[in-house]
Length: 433
Image (cartoon, rainbow, N blue to C red; front, top):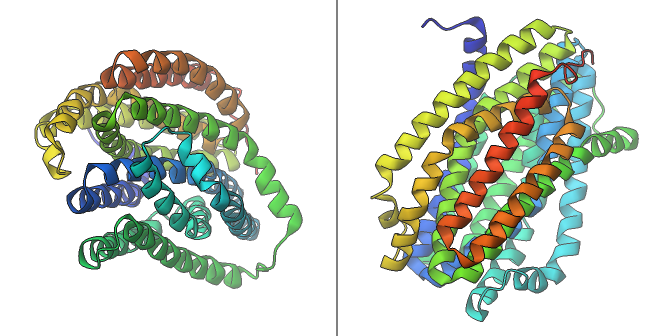
């Protein structure tokens, strides 16, 4: 079947976005492999717990990327380029402020936060070490999010790809050197992440500053614009918070199931994240295309592009599910998993593969509605889908790791229904800048 104009636009934005998104979980998996081979199962479990806390803190701020993408894309669609760049600069200042606040608040609370997961003393000690060091990189991580959102809104997904490959390659190299070469333990993995993320942030700052200067946009903080960016991101914050509740609940349940289950869950979560980021490439194209089309007042193009992106999501999910099944016998060996961890991981991967087509639909529709600025509906939908998930997850405490991952499948199914019902209507098709 020949490619339509919408297919070509989707591919132009999604392919570079795919590379940028896949770079992160690939190098995180490299971190797990380095820590697993160099430090053992206890350290892998500690990395899983601390990594979940850090990912929660950073992902709660994903509105810095998503909200900025939608705002900048709408302004671009309306032909207001200076306003688009002003929104981007405001997003960077907001990211810096939030990053500093996270360090101040979370550093002294690190032992308390880790203790909430119920990890053993040896795992908890290493998890606190990793978390405290990694917190120093949160301003850089959040600036990367905001800078990525600016460039995506400008319809540029190639530059984020280049920055992602460079920073995450640096991260993997530093982690191997610090952990295996210098024998710094889990602290070495954390320092590698801090240095690499800060380097990536500096690149984004230079790109955005140069763009702002070309358009004559001031670089000084603009309190009203920063406040607007924060207010617009509130609903996305609620949505993301509830999504993290789901993932943190899963980690807490896995921790209580036992050490092999926790290690297998940590690895499976990173694999699932890798697959999710692949599917999210289409969603990112959806954010940029939808924001620009609605900013230009083109409802017909928005609907047509949405239909094509949903098809791309379904077939991409089918392909990824088959890939997981083919790779399933070989994956445990990549992480130095012992026999108990291997048995748990191999069983869970069936569930991971099964739900990939549903995930494809969910990620695409989520991206389209974010691009449309339909954040309030997304927040409420997250409330109901989380309520559908939590009882199933708690039941898994007595049923094992496979049951826990089936509960995650229930959550994805509930999200597909909620987002699909919204996309079939017209309330989200709001035009203009």
